[in-house]
Image 1 (cartoon, one colour):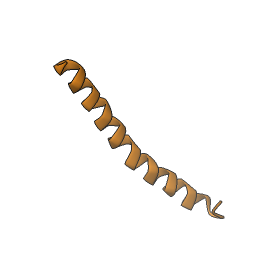
Image 2: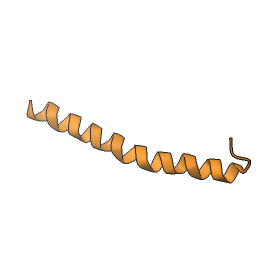
Image 3: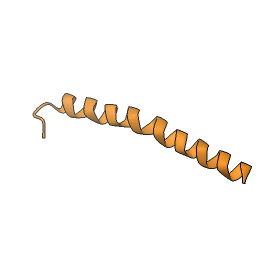
Image 4: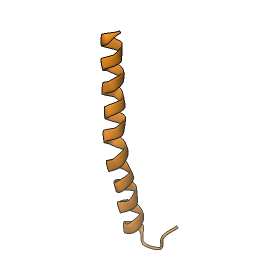
Length: 37
């Protein structure tokens, strides 16, 4: 665990920035498949 809480917070923020668009893309792809099928 890093000694600086700011470092931990920015790491968490970086993870969120990467995960959110991926989750949104998966959701959109699932909706497109459901609508097409």
